[in-house]
Image 1 (cartoon, one colour):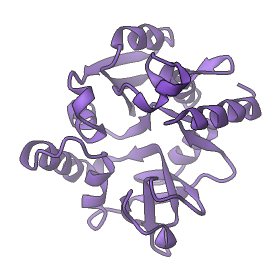
Image 2 (cartoon, helix red, strand yellow):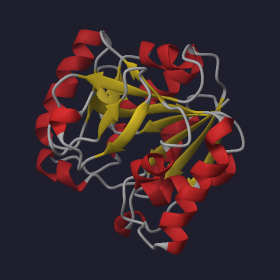
Image 3 (cartoon, helix red, strand yellow):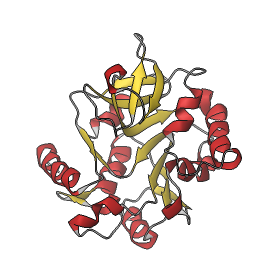
Image 4 (cartoon, helix red, strand yellow):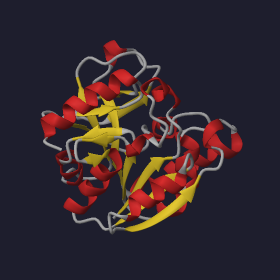
Length: 238
């Protein structure tokens, strides 16, 4: 199994914290966000990853290569004017097999990866419970199958928040790649979040909503998120 890590963005909303390097290099205790992802792969027995880079990619490459994994890098030169749907489309050659997916700006308990791998088929890690309007949310049916995913869903109807860690398996891959191609090449909507492509294929494929409780996770967008993440890092003993 491969892993695809999206780490191209500049993280402009963190400017108030004084951080100017790629977000995934933020220190969380004795590790960085990127270290935590790569450690989760190693602990699960995975040895390969494809990382989509862009902003200050020299720093990111040097940090990633210290992990000792078999890494491939894909460059998003247009990172300032595109979003995750474009970055993932650029990594499509790494989608010829089952893969784990990571947003690189998420701190998470590494046992979440073990839980995803233990789930049959494609699955997304979901923090269940109340979720805010700006978060990527999911609606699931009684069997735990994701029916809708996106930021614009009514929070009252949603199971919870997608934390940016998931697993995608071969049965849906052709349709997933076609959805990515549609938004990027046909519709020209390269500023969307990649979840738009997931939403497009939900009716045709089972994607499980995996409740990650009691394992915590947090996406880091703002200085306030960063403070919360550093507290979480202490809780996790990082």
